[in-house]
Image 1 (spheres, one colour):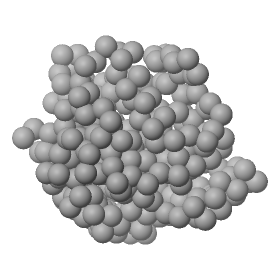
Image 2 (cartoon, one colour):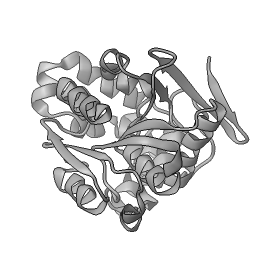
Image 3 (spheres, helix red, strand yellow):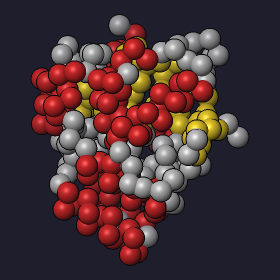
Image 4 (cartoon, helix red, strand yellow):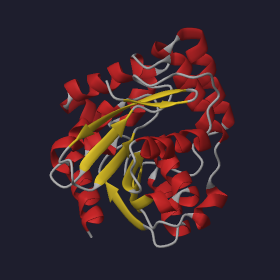
Length: 259
């Protein structure tokens, strides 16, 4: 299996697409693995070489002791690029993956080409809500929170009409490493990137979901008005817009990256 080895652990990564195509890094939501991006593989690999990875604490990557920070999770991406000898790459991140993209856009812009920030915000939730979730996971494992979280990620209409996809999302959450998940919750809890936005040096596409309760359109509009040169689009979905609005999501992202 391909792993990028760092002094304190390793990241699992996976390639897909033509070897000499431009590289597009996909960074996943909290509690998911690289498989979250399965709906994008067929469309995106027509144009890009996809680099998907499991975030620290998730999937097959090391669950090093927490708490984590967005800076640490962003530095992991830089280390992954270094490990693979990639000078620059496109980047698309959703939720916490989008926060990682904001950090990289301000602190490692020279490593990025185009950036897409999906269903994300510079400040997500409150310390109280994240602490309650961390406590619930520590007491009862992932099943204590998975159903509630998954219920906010997809609209009721989509869950009813796509039961297999909804079950897959729930299963991914239930199988997440509780320690890695709690450590990553702390990274989101402690992150406030609002003052960083003016320093983001790569003008991103900001993509929001109309029905997203976790990072509503107002959060995406805030990003678009505070990051120089950002473009804003909205799709008919809740939080996992790449799954619920797959075709529109793919078209919006590919259209932006191709321009």
